[in-house]
Length: 285
Ligand SMILES: [Zn+2]
Image (tube, rainbow, N blue to C red; front, side, top):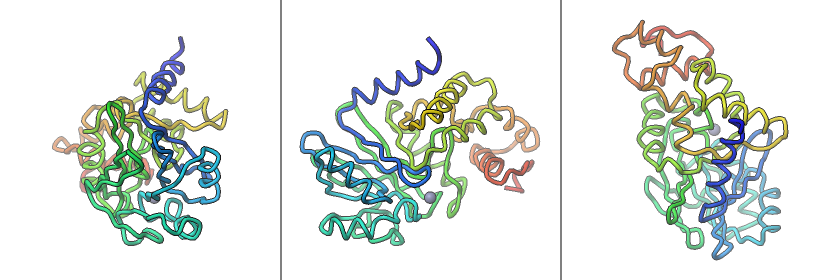
């Protein structure tokens, strides 16, 4: 059995045994909107529904009633459909953690609960990519999933536009990292293949990473999404959830900065990835 089959099989099994349904709606160039469905009531939440007509037509063809609109953060490619959603569904509340979220009606904070049919969605405040970014976490019986927006991607994390490495570290380790390992991860963009090519430069011999890279390449060729991943899988190959472990690049950084903290290493990795520069000291972060 090839590695690709193992990865896709594990994820497929988990999706199948899940107690609620998530419908993936690819939008724009590489964004994802989602419909979180309570199958008992056919009520749903639309997450980051930047192309309203597309999301509503998927909801309609699945016989779903959208009763809430959840926005992870204010960037246009996530929140930019909200005004139109409000026109089309005037009585449906629009949730977000930031006043800048387009057409927001209900501002939420850490640990707030939003009901979707019988499902309870928990808000997890995770400022870093933006200062008002939130995650949405759902748990029912033994199943759970988290919508991570631009905080955690498969094999990567979001850019630090308005936050610090310490905040991203908190989001990845203290918030997402503490969720059950089999929590399904639905992120805001299809960046998996590129992310894993970068990850491979840091850990060229990580078997889980190489399997996921192969899987993502196949999905890319077929035009299929790589979501969902799981929290446990991310811990096994995502370089931003592995700053406590040595990797080819982190070793050099550590040699130069023997007292570097895990947060410094995360900061170093984001500089390395997003700025392309070889940062060699904590002072340069
Ligand atoms: Zn963003």
